[in-house]
Structures are given as C-alpha cells and as structure tokens.
Image: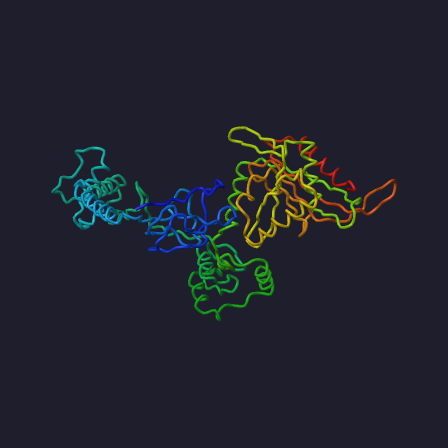
Length: 480
C-alpha cells in the first residue's frame, strides 16, 4: 500500500482545501492522472496521481482542509495485492500479541471492565491519605477510620464545652472540616426597600428567578415586608399582582426600551459557517501580519488638478510608486525579521489588491518600472479578469515587492492598510474628492487623492517613509 501525502504546491503554505475529487475509491488510475482539485493561496490547482494502480482510500471530502505533508490518498499499485494481504494479517497478529502480553497490573487498575464496582478495595486509598502506616485498618476491619476520627472529635468537643451532651445528638453533616459552632438561635435577614416594597435579599433573588416584577407584589408579611410566599403566589397567579404606580410603569417602560433583560438574552439571528477558501487564506495572512509586523501609517493628499481628462488613475498610481522607490528604495523591499535581513529590490512588482465576492486577491503586476501606461492597463485588466474567473496562475499570487490598494473606488478617504510579509510597505488610495485650496491669495477648487502609506517600522524609518510619500505626491501632481 502506497500513501500519498499532500506536497507543498509551490507556495509555502501550511495546508490546502479540497475543492473536488476527480476519482473515487476503487478507481484505476494512471501515473500523472489528475487526482484532486485543491485550492491554495486563492488559486485552484489539479494534483496529479504519483502512482499507477487502484485508489484504496481517499483522505478527506470536498471542502476539507488537508495539512501539507498529511495523507491525501492511498494506492494499491500493481503487484501489491498479495503483499498487502500478508501485511494486514501480520499487523492483526501483532496487535493480538500485544494485547495478550499486556502486564497483569494494567488489567487490575481502577476502572477496568473486568472488575465490578463492589470488588474494588478502597484500603489503598486510605493508605495513601494516612501519614502513619500504623493507623491503617487491617484488611479484615470493617470500621471506617474517618468515621471513627469524626466520632472522637465530636465526643471530645462535647466534653470540652461542658454542655451535658446537648450537642451530642446533633448530626455531623460532614460538609465542613474542623470545629463548627452550632446554636439554636434564629437569625433574620434585614429587609430593604426595593421597587417601593420591602423585601429581604433572599426574597429579591427568588423574585428575579421567577421573573416577578417586585413592584407588583402585594406584601403580607410583618410591617409590609414581601415574603417568599407572596412571590410564589404572584408567579403562579399573574392576575393577582397589583398594578404598579404610574412612575413605576414609566420607569419599567423606559428600562424595557433601553436594553433587553439580561435573564432573556436575544437569540442569534444568523448561522455559523466555516470560513474556507480565499477568506481562510486571508485570515491566516492577516494574523501573520499582526503577529510579526510593526506598522506605522502616514497620510496625505495628492493634488491632481493638473491632470488631463480621462487620465488612468491606477496607471498613474503605479508610476508614482516607482517614483517613491527611486527616492527611497528601502520601501520596495522584503524584510526577514527572524534573521534581521533586508532585501532591496531593483525591479518593482506591485501586488494589486482585487476585491471579489469570494474575498481579497493580491495579484502581482511584474516589472512596473519598465512598463508604459498601455502595457500596465492591459496587464491590470488581465489580472482582474483572472481574479473574477478564479483562474489566476499560482505564480501571479506571490513575489510582489510592494502592495497597492485602490479602495477609493468604493468609499473612504484614509485607511490603515495591512502589510503582507515579507513586504515592508503598502499604499492605499482613497476616494477622489474636490477641495477648496488657497492659490496666490485666492481660492480654487482642486481634485485630490487621499493616500495612506503603511510601513514596517522595523525595516524603515519615519524619514524614509515620509520622503517616499513626498515623491509620490510630487509625481501625482504633475500634468503628465
């Protein structure tokens, strides 16, 4: 029997999700025949069969998450039928031998199925709790040492108190360790005014338990105190409750509208569902970023009043990123915090955040520093189409050197975007807006793009980040 473990599909991820099995148990498969579709890092890839033979077992169903290196499928290859049968028999024989050779002491332990409850000898437990071996009862003794000690303690306590055995008839409840003073004196709780009526804390707790409005209970106790019987009567006969005063009614109504009762929590209005696929990968990446990155965000506005009509906003943002990297190359870089190493890239591959109903995709635009606007627009359209069709190749989902998020097409001015390690920076563009600006002693209305730059402060200084952002603002403010 050959076991096929899920390999690393080339992206360094710890797991992958089964999208669809392309074979069933008992099917005959050939070498490199498509075996299963797996989703990993937002891409769906087909995993080929590493063996030729018959599928003996599939590990997992559609939607299950398999860890990298864990069994994915088992195969019975040609010529292994006889060996598999012999191996199974040997395994069963070995298992039986281990059961026969099990030490006898293991079967004599407490809780064994071979021993009835009334056959368990508790003297061992008494021995463990005793500090002197001479105090242990013999195997033939039926006297309980704890009962004997308790009886002796009670007799000595009676003699010391000199109460002529008055407390001797009082039973030991066994719930308190030590000497407890007892008395026949009756203690009464002090009543307090609650909701316009007097009641003790115990009765107030009973009213809460039975969900009885304290202001509607008619008291029958001494001095107008509400008794437990009054509360039970009000709970059994709601019609017998007295009408609360107008002040109490308004207060009760106000409390009802202010917040729901704690004793009646509102049921959930939705159903729990498993986070899978793209959203599961996104959650893992965001958690990794939160645990390792030290983020800091700078915000400013780019004045794009000089732009021509119909300007490609995304292409201009990409060009501005390269202008920022030329001013401060350290933000177009990767950082390895475990080894305190940094790699400054000579080319720029921008990770474009693409929003889809399935979650967020980050696809790489290669060599932004050498592409013109028409090439950039063509590549942007290709990546967006692949993202919407879930057909992005795995190589397009990794190895970007900086990230751009253009969330402003939906809403929002500024943000604190999350860095995707090992990158050290991400730029987010907010919604375009018109703003009044002073010009030569007067005022004008200009179009503005809000920018938010989040950088990893372990790898970059605040000055480097500010100069990077300043270079972007200057590039975006130019007419061409």
